[in-house]
Amino acid sequence: MRKHISHSDSHEVVISISKLYKSFEENHVLRGIDLELCKGENLVVLGRSGTGKSVLIKIIVGLLKPDSGTVKVFDKEVDKLNKKELMELRLKVGFLFQHSALYDSMTIRENLEFPLVRNKRHISGKEIDDSVKEVLEAVGLSDTINQLPSELSGGQQKRIGLARTLIMKPEIIFYDEPTAGLDPLTSSEINDLINEVQEKYKTSSIIITHDLTCAKDTGDRIFMMENGKFIRQGDFEEVFDTSDERIRGFFDYNFIQ
Amino acid sequence: MDTTSPQPAKYLVSKNVDEFFAGISDVAKFILQFFKEAFRPPFEYQEVIKQCYNVGYKSLSLITLTAFITGIVFTKHSRPALADFGATSWLPSLIGIAIMKALAPLITGLICAGKVGSQMGAELGSMRVTEQIDAMEVSAVNPFKFLVVTRVLASTFMVPLLVMYSGFIGLFGSFLNVHANEQTSLVTFIHGAFVKISFSEIVSSLVRALIFGFTIGIIGCYKGYTTTQGTEGVGRAANASVVIIMFLLFIEEIIIVQFLNWINPGA
Image (cartoon, rainbow over the protein chains, first blue to last red):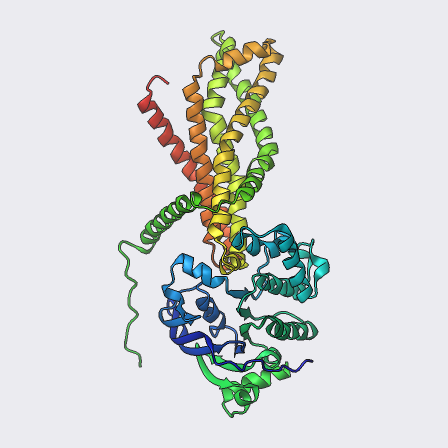
């Protein structure tokens, strides 16, 4: 298993979140989140299912609206952007969904071309071909170009989802449970891929996971989330060097599994 | 001990009535957004053509079969009543009026509600619950323009064409029956079928089909696009699309017929 090497030596903040709250009717999902993501950093948000991790990144990209608090991406307050400004901001971010969210009626090539041709209207056919080939090579799946998503395995779908994200050359990537539902070997390959992407494309990332191995292999910093709040943060050893039963329990359960 | 009693939810009238009007308000906003996005570039021409193919070409076999059988059956059932008065020579006119003015738009609309409306509801609903619509949004693509506008335009354009097609297929079915029984020639049948139908009545049938097509597209897309609660929600969206579209088609039919009678009482 590849040991992660931290690439974050910058203190330039690309995402800044302050006092973020979000509820769905009576269900208080986020209860005062504060977070900063620095340029070139892989930040892991770790926690059990249903603690509000995915809601957090969906608020950051503007898919959900917060009840209160501020979310700034590249110093722009997401909640206050108009539609056009939000679209411009989204060109700088990529999002790998938990179940990949590939367009199932399109081939892999069409999936990859889709954001490119709609955001760069004057791009030539050759440039599109080159971009598609480049990202497919980056995720190691050049031979799947004419297949449909349903013909690929879960791990391959995750890789293609990442390729579709990379084709827009994002500065920030959000990974929503990148290893969920994958076997340990494939999970390890995805973790390596996340690190390779960070190294090659100089991206900053927020990785949402409940998988300790993923957190350990990919995270420069880890934020432990419980009931909509961060209860501990630091590098892997700092987070788990504690007698807090909530964290110890999570650690023990993961490694017993 | 907790002494606070649960607060009753506050509704203007009742939960169901409030939700009904909230739903109407949401559909109105959805329609408004359609008109905003439909006339604003960039335009998704290729996707509109693809959806026209899905709505039009892929419905042809079902429309052909239904219209052909309707033409034959309606003719068979009408003949005895006219024969009592020795008026079977009026069959082509009766069939022409019935099919071109009433049956073709309504039957085609109902078939498209079942086939096209449910497909749109299920397809977009499935894309919603599998986060494909969110994926479009975060990659800076407008999913409403790509998914909704294209489908609504396709059904609005294609349903009138399907109505014309089903009208002629229905007349053809009717002709075969009339020819077999009364040995009427095709020219005589066509002349008889259209002698009592004015051009404005054909146009009004097409306008009705246009409204039906828009209704099928907008409701199918609305139910799919706003799907919640996973795969169960997808099933509900497909089902609700068909039920609501059929209900609206009948309401629209009544209103349009009343309106046409009002502006042209002789028709």
